[in-house]
Length: 401
Ligand SMILES: Nc1ncnc2c1ncn2[C@@H]1O[C@H](COP(=O)(O)OP(=O)(O)O)[C@@H](O)[C@H]1O
Ligand SMILES: CC(=O)OP(=O)(O)O
Ligand SMILES: [Mg+2]
Image (cartoon, rainbow, N blue to C red; front, top):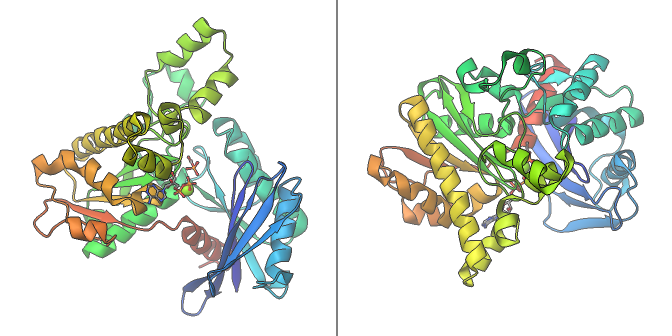
């Protein structure tokens, strides 16, 4: 049976097709790809099949998400790298949905009620939920009888205790308006925490783990007793560490002051903090690779951006060690976390006081366990796989397993 996973963004759709051997619970990826610049000039779809390294790229007008999904399905069936003989082969579709609010503590089969709930929560994640919904609706329009599943970024963090998720604001802000910390990237945090426990040969429940998901967007999470107990993103994915284009945590009065003194409206300040902040604001480059390259060439802005990025992560790691009264493992994952040994070293330098010892050779060789045997805390680098979790949950829900 085959399962398609979609991660729909505002102008892109990432997709991955899995072949599931239900008998043996084996999931193998057949292909993956991305539709880019949906609704913008120069839109295109790239497809890479697992069997070979070359990519098929198709340019063409992708006016909206429905057109893009239609084109993706055609590429999967009759492109030069076709991996599906017909749509009948698809058993289900799994979607990443960023904000599930307090409505979802686990993944859900998509029904009209689920769609309504995702829609209701869209005010809480205006950059993410509307495109997620577009993907779901586009797929439903093309294949009305196909079972679809929503996998929420917020679900894993619904275990946080009240003292962690409440903001110290008048009660009505939470009770009436649902303003609280939700946390995101839960699919990734949960997956790498579990993988770290397996690597260390201990049950997740017995470990205190800090997971660092460092991608273009990024967040940290603290796991204790097998559950997320705190995370750096908050009411929205703007909070926490410094990201590619997001400011992360700042004095909450700053946006109000900017609005008052510079005659900017809330939407303009939101754009400033979400799209013009972060690494981009400091160095002019949002992509970490460009910052690393710039710093090597002596660019002061890039150096400062990297210093601020690492500093913001160190502060949260320190606070989560305090929150859990200890830590057994620290895990790095996602684009930056998985690929840059130098940044991992820099971040961990401030924890040598408590006996953290990196193994430089293993770190440089990109091994999984990158601390020494003598280190008081295990430091790991684990490849995240949000798509696989989505495929697993989709299979579970559609097959009743
Ligand atoms: N070798 C590397 N060194 C530093 N950063 C890297 C490296 N490889 C990838 N990255 C960074 O990873 C980020 C993208 O991570 P990813 O997890 O794919 O993000 P997202 O899913 O949010 O798009 C980019 O900032 C990119 O520069
Ligand atoms: C929730 C979130 O920030 O997601 P992404 O990193 O994909 O932007
Ligand atoms: Mg990501």
